[in-house]
Length: 112
Length: 114
Image (cartoon, one colour):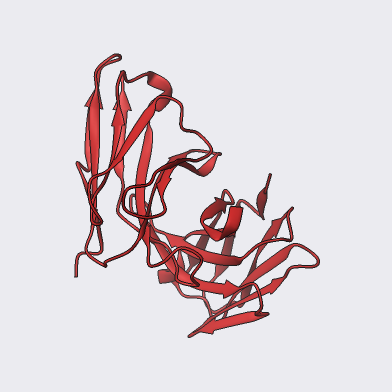
């Protein structure tokens, strides 16, 4: 059974700092890995999806990497802003590619 | 540009009552999913529908039933609500099974069972 872990559970940084969020998974036979953002009281917004054959994906100030052999993914946020404050979730596609297993998330606060 | 729409947004039930949570997507997606989100547990898959006419159990299906009414709509029913089912419920959809398209989520239904 796939298990996804995100450490730390919470993180507070000053505005402008570059930061890395970590995600680890136990079963390397994943299809894809997806990073989401969740604002309080809201649903999940997809940020980046990395296919199993890829090593990384970029969107604006966000860069996500995937290392299947070590069971790790990282989300890099450049020049953080207060608007980046949210909970970030990673999830792996397993079970034939049709099921998502989620981590419990990292709650990020970017302070002025 | 609605995406995935869930109704209701909030609901309070008494133990033993029944209720159906509604979900509709306007993106012509084949697959639809129901999750629950609990503090410290993350999101867990309850049921999913890979395509119209099919449904399968996820990680935590006990106490729930689902209906894929048509390609657009996927409902979740609690036949006899229990306090342990107090949670936030999310519906999601995806373009094609085995594709590299992401899942899209609704804003959730916040359900409290007294």
